[in-house]
Structures are given as C-alpha cells and as structure tokens.
Image (cartoon, rainbow, N blue to C red; front, side):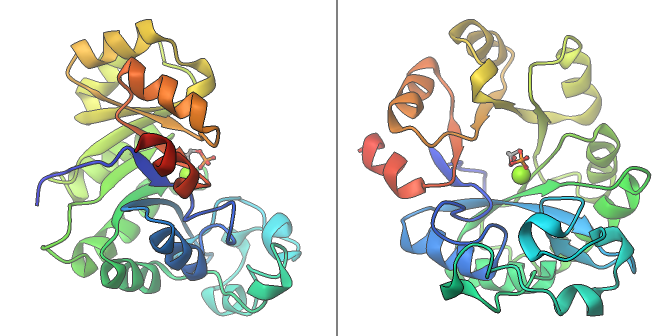
Length: 245
Ligand code: G3P
Ligand code: MG
C-alpha cells in the first residue's frame, strides 16, 4: 500500500494522555483518532529491540543505568507507566514485536524512529527493521523509517530499501541535498521551532515531504500546514485533528 501520511502523527503514541512508547499509549492514540503513530526504537544490552526514547532508564522507570546495560528480562521487570499516572502502573516497556502486533491490530500506520546507542547504529537498524519486515502486514501502509543517525539511515536503506526514509534533524543541515540523495530520503522531519515558510518551500520544490515535530498548539499546526508541512507529530493528536477539520 502506498504511503499516505496523515496531517497528524501521534508522537510516541499520544504522549500527553498516556505514557510514551507504551501499548496503552498506542491504544489511546487510536481512540483519539490518530491514523499514524511515531515511536522510538533502541536495543537492550542483549540485542533485543524495544520501544524507549531515552538512553537512560531514570525518567520513565526510576531505575538507574541505561537500556543498553540491561537484558530484556531485566527491562521487562520495570514499570514504564507509573511515572505518568497510577492508572498506568504496571505498563511494560514493549518489545518491538508486541508493539507491531498491537499497532497492526489497531490498523495504525507507523513511523519507526531509530534511536541507536553510539556504535550500535547498524546493529539497531538491522535487528529492528529485520523484525519489523517479518511482522508488518502487507495490507497496511509501509512504515516510514527515520533517524537522527545517518549510519542508521544507511543501514535502513540496505535492510528495507522499499520502505521510505525520513532525514530527522533539529535544524535543516547545510548539506541536506547530499544527505537526502545519499540515504534516498523522501521526507525531512524537522523541529518546527526552526522552520520557516522559505525552508518548507525549498524542500517541497526539491520534491520532499516536510514533517515537523513536536507540535501541540493547534494554531501553530495550522500555520505549519498552511506553509506546506505535510504532517506534524503531536502528543495530543485529538486537539490538532479538531483544528484540521
Ligand atoms: O520523530 C520525531 C521526534 O520524535 C524526534 O524527536 O526526541 O521526540 O524522539 P524525539
Ligand atoms: Mg521520536
């Protein structure tokens, strides 16, 4: 199925109303009307792909150390929901397989953001995307793969060449035309705070889709859409979808 990006993509699920990068967050995103969600992918110490944004475990689980220092078994003992609200206590850090199974059942489109540890860029993309390729059903839109890591994009190109890639950056890099050509990107995903109408025009003229993160103010979203931004990542997809109507 061709890529048909919506105007709003749930950021880390629906991070405003459910704990980020959890199964509960994806269910919530679907309830709020999101058609697509973004999530962050990294590897445990024993090379298992899981959904987690930070390098360190502290903010989300209260535990010390890094995801990369723990085995999947140790990671699975941690609570990724209680920090957000007692209502979500017991929510686990999902494996990629669990997340993809649920997301496919919900019929959501996905943006897999590869968040590799330094030195594990290739490994993270190969293991994560290899698994995603095995599990993601053909009847759903192909996933969009993005990363701040150029090495991860390079590996994604080799593993799933037919899945579209987005160059992720805070500000538009000076050498964006080379990067986009080198990694075969069809979109550039930028921090909305650094976007201008001129930048959006330039990128669209080059044939690229422009995506913007993280946009929670409906008025700002309308401005960005009017500039030609295709999709915005939002923690509160429902509020932005209302503004879009
Ligand atoms: O992919 C968009 C956005 O998620 C990138 O930043 O730090 O929220 O993963 P971050
Ligand atoms: Mg992300």
